[in-house]
Amino acid sequence: MLKARAVEEEIRSQWAEAHARRTSYVDIRAGDVHRGLGGQNRVPQVCQVMMRLRHPGDLVIDGPPSGQGASLTIRYLLPRESNKVQEQKILAERPLADEPQEGDERRRANHDAYGKLIMRNAAGNAFSDSGALCRIRFGDDAAGARIDGVVGNSIAVEIESRTPKQIRGAVLDLIFHPYPRKLLLIIAGHQNDARQAANQCRHILREEIGNGNFQVVLLAGSGREHQQTSDVARVREALGRLGWSTAEIG
Figure 1 (tube, one colour):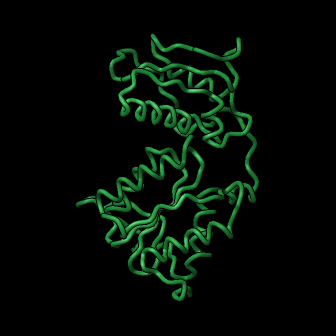
Figure 2: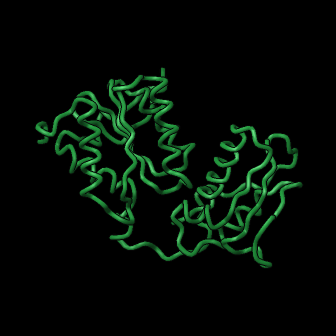
């Protein structure tokens, strides 16, 4: 279910990425956001969020008279911090509009479940997604955090389909996990450019843990469209580069 918070986070991520490139504005098109987030017939609701995030000076440079179409394009001025007027807050995790409840089959066909399916098919019983081995401690914080799984006793695994900013946060969890090797699976879900997100994560991991100790795999399939054969092959290849052998499959 496409939610207002996901739309807002995607727009803010694009602001941040454009600001990092030292540009003075970024043009965001509703249809691109809708497609990147995997929405289905939710373009008018995406437009609502885009309009609510406008500041004085932001320009609508394209779109239908109603302002509720895929062609709606807003030029947001950067940096956002320079604007004193604060946009209305959007309710976290609130659906953009009433939608029917998803059936059991559709509920299971989500990105995380697909990623774990690929991991189990690629690594067999060597992949575990529960228990103490998946926990991370950040200093004295007893709550800590969890990663999506481990392979054997040396590879930490994260599976991500969210916005680039959220994926980069998952990389931090990988870095803090005690296992020396890291595997990040990215599923094209809530990103306009999943390849760019993958390259950003490769750069971070290269800087923090060095080449040879990590793999970032951009899967071909997703929770909506499985491509198990090719994705299992990609993950097995990545595991092999991390020193794990398919002979270890349980």
